[in-house]
Length: 438
Ligand code: ADP
Image (cartoon, rainbow, N blue to C red; front, side, top):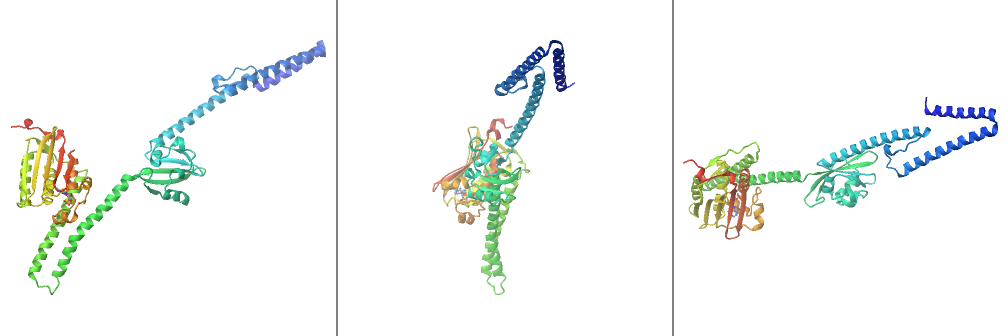
């Protein structure tokens, strides 16, 4: 039987009992009894209402703190306890789901900002804080355009054409490049997604510059060769002396193109991750003697070339790559040192590291150029580089080879006094003299 019908039966029973009393002891006593029962009932309900009011006002609203009740109030409080229990369970589940969602969005590599109908910030993840310089605690409720003030962004927001992303240069801090995309969702809300594309953009610029540089490098010799061929194929051309000179110049340009293609192939091999370095124990002393002979034939007696080998320690590395790096440095020293100058090729151990360095007494390099010398096609003096057969790729190749050997490449120079190019090999690559078999 339900509590509701129980309470009706109780009331009917009270009325019947009062009627019987009325018949036996008279109306006065019967009504007194009925009034007393009614008064007791009113006091009972008021007591429970006060308990409920106190619980609603002061308690922590957990099911455990719900007061005990009697009669009808026992059922009311039991219902209330059940309701509070299920409510707090679903609240817990909801806050867990919210926490999970916030943790997931915080771990995302992209920045996310939730904007309301008026483009005010509702929430953002930590990456968005870094990208856009906003603070979730301080800036929520602020208009996004008060914090991201760049004109292209303000225009993008106003144009409301969100199908295409916006590339925002010089975002929060100077060199950051961001890709921003707005995605409308829910009730007029928007998700602002930001992605850091600085690295990608830099690679893209490098790729574009590289293609432009290679085309430029190839165009000049091709123009020269094309011009001579045109002159030579002219029917009226009957000057054997001039033709001979043209052939010499054409073959010079052909060699220049060949050198460029060879350097490009070397660079591409070095940049290819699949191309694993073929290492062996290298007799540096033998390698440097060969280098000195090559340098002397290149210098053709114009320079004084010295070899200073302070150690018999060997090196673990790729013979071909190291030969290529060392000979690039030696040939640069010859090309950028005027006749009569001095060039030394050195191998020594310092602080247990292997040092290979080439020192020259040449033209030197101004300090502002030094950090950029290992960039592809970077030259201090382009005409001098080309005149001496340079491709502008030599030091980029050296830098790559040094990196593949976990070595550091250092350049020091004084204008008019000369330069020193050093490759410093790590201790783990050095085989000490006393460890060698006899
Ligand atoms: P390049 O083929 O032009 O010599 P590199 O990459 O080998 O290209 O060198 C880059 C630039 O560094 C050169 O154009 C030159 O300006 C400068 N450079 C390289 N070696 C020396 C050196 N020993 N003395 C002075 N300048 C040098």
